[in-house]
Amino acid sequence: NAGVTQTPKFQVLKTGQSMTLQCAQDMNHEYMSWYRQDPGMGLRLIHYSVGAGITDQGEVPNGYNVSRSTTEDFPLRLLSAAPSQTSVYFCASSSARDTRGPLEQYFGPGTRLTVT
Amino acid sequence: QQQVKQSPQSLIVQKGGISIINCAYENTAFDYFPWYQQFPGKGPALLIAIRPDVSEKKEGRFTISFNKSAKQFSLHIMDSQPGDSATYFCAAILTGTASKLTFGTGTRLQVTL
Image 1 (cartoon, rainbow over the protein chains, first blue to last red):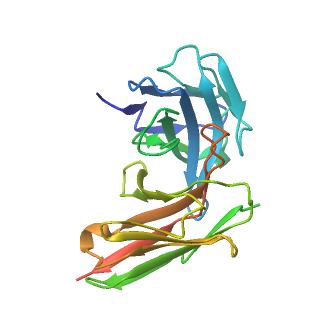
Image 2 (cartoon, rainbow over the protein chains, first blue to last red):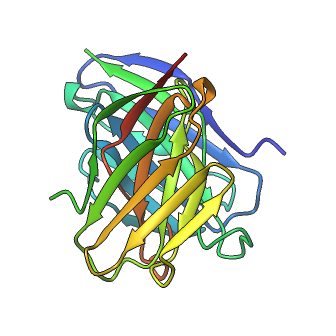
């Protein structure tokens, strides 16, 4: 049971380039989310999904696209990278059936992205 | 608009001391308040959580105190240890809104020997 996995761990992009950050979970969780973490700003929700085929915007969605074709995968796409998107990106998943407490989110190890 | 305000930004505590981190929220509809612990290079992990119908929750050395009328909650770490050195985030969620956590800005805790 790998939990939540993210690839790549590190990435450097040039302004205007596109890329996809990968996220996968093997816990059969319904809910998946993408957050970005910036110094002094905590974690901010980018996009989230409540199940395959269903996605919605979070607090800071501009410049990012998502899709959820399977329960396991939730990729985040940057269509035209900008320096303002330099950040650490975390993917998380959760289940409404978690007995420890409602909606405990399990986070991946993060992707550190630098846009020059 | 920061819906969950967290203080202090950083904290240095001696080993064996008490670490206290405070959070305040604005949205009275929030109904679940977790704390996350994050070590360098890792993703956050759930530490402890509380519902607003409870004024205090304790798990080992970690205690959440909750003041619903003041819209404030705090994390107390008793007998702080060097291994507790990490960044701590408070958060809030409406449990009917799937995975939409609202996080505080984080507190970097350093426990010295």
